[in-house]
Length: 467
Image (cartoon, rainbow, N blue to C red; front, top):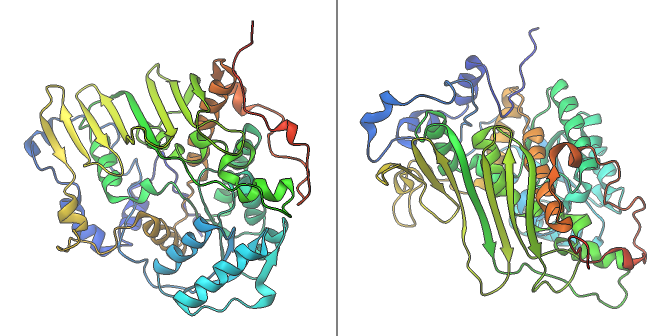
């Protein structure tokens, strides 16, 4: 039997592209409208494509995955995002179920268990509920078909490696590592998963957000010319935090407060801003060769991380990306991506209208959100607008069609870019891709146990050297 080719971010044979597109008849019917220009449509013949159709991947995004074989899923990580991912998975298709749960903390697991019972009438058996740092192994070994890996990202490389060894399809929440050691594990595991024809989708949900997919296709068609640089931003108010409670050990506190500790989350430039960096690496197909930048801690209450970064990335062909992120109350909330081309500029972002202007500032394309996705009062071509659901629609569609997909390596690249920016700000040095990806010692503790630890190791970094 001829071996099926794995779909990666860079290219895809035309025959596989057509097969995947056929997964969603509604998406195929809507494609002309999805990508239509509201102005300047007659200029398309003059465009020089960056890639030819079939050389890049466009997901079919029907409202639900097609029916097929039942899929029994396990959830590893029962925090807020983990519970959300489980709900998104259940809303993405019929014939799918959550049958096993794993978490370090029993109260978190029980909260997810109760929510699934209340909202989906799903009972998780006692012998399918696992507590502890080894709970991921027990979930994966419990007879499941697919696994949702949604713990703090420090644990993602280890959990993905085990799931792949066991031949389980994986959903990986972003980011997928917190250091160079984790990045290397992810790359190696991604290639093993590809060799096993496993389907791996990651939580960089913009890859399944219709406005971004339409924008990506327009740029591949040559709408802005060759990409020459960009700016990406994620600025918002401070995230949540947990103060240490009586009876908590140091390790328990850090894990419950994980978004504020670098070894657990990678800091905000990795944990959150990876989304925006990923848009540039996805659209350009490039990876940074070096990073230099600044950052500081102004308002964060717990943890050892910064709350703002400004990074200059230099890419393989000499172009530059400016990256900015911040989590401080009362400051500008700019959250968008801008990509500059030789013929025009694309503007995107979660809360903005995706559009392209030429070098004279004339709008030549705009994503017709109301027609495609509808509004609160007017239906569009699609009913499902939530990209967090659509990423599971795509994952299940690939599993059921037997057409492998593997986004792990692509997301590992954008993750390592964020790690480079973080360490450039922490140290004040120019950090290179080769140096960061080759680091031998990671930042995740070798021993994981719910006990007190030497907290003097967790200090806020200060760049450079003092006089």
